[in-house]
Image (cartoon, rainbow, N blue to C red; front, side, top):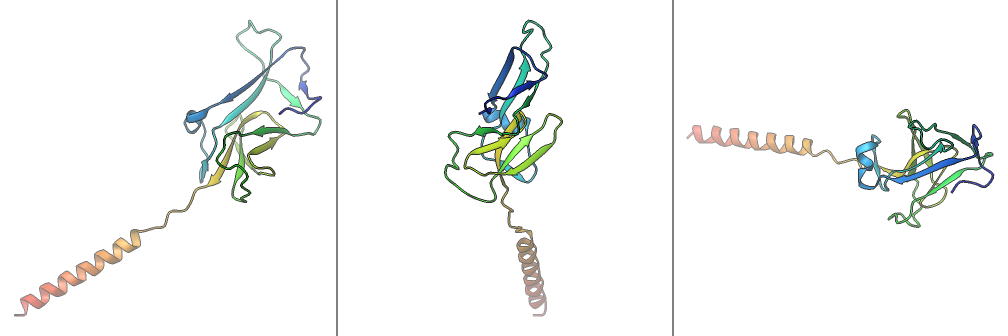
Length: 153
């Protein structure tokens, strides 16, 4: 939700607000190392609509008078969960990613337009290769000792 009394910068009489949900395409366009997206990426973008017939729409900034824009993720499986690991991810236009704490379940707050998702840290997989090495070495030692016993007969 865009707060009341929000103004476009620079000021224009007509503006175009685009909201889009990338759905299953989210991971094709955005990724975050060490985190998993638990909601689709949604975008909120604002353009000058004074000349819609033109091919180049100019992107506008928003002056929210210090009040945050709220992005609500409906249908999330995280309804009502309060977990310190759950974060809001903001994907900037230049490829930068910013993480912030969630103060309300399924809601991210921002002072900028852009693309947003809810993320959680990836669970670290237990390393099982040491078990394979120990098992292989134990089997190899057992094989060698068995061969050594048989050759002594």
